[in-house]
Length: 66
Image (cartoon, rainbow, N blue to C red; front, side, top):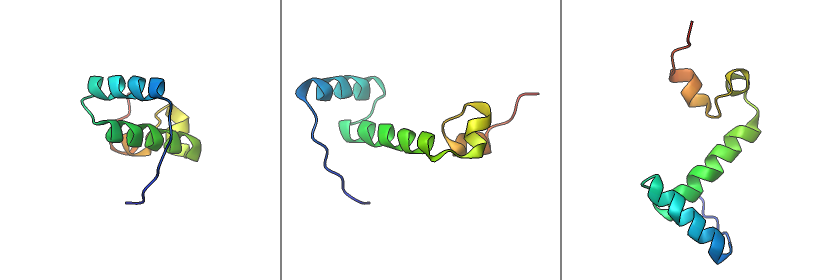
């Protein structure tokens, strides 16, 4: 996996740590999840933009409501 170094303020780190704890993730996992979700949203896939789902895999493996 590629490595990325990010410099953030102590206040931002505290917010991320709190969010990570709430989601039962490590700080690193929480940062990776935020970046992944952001990348998926900006990718502009047609599967996700049609129904408001921000992760293409969710739309692929989810049943559509009738």
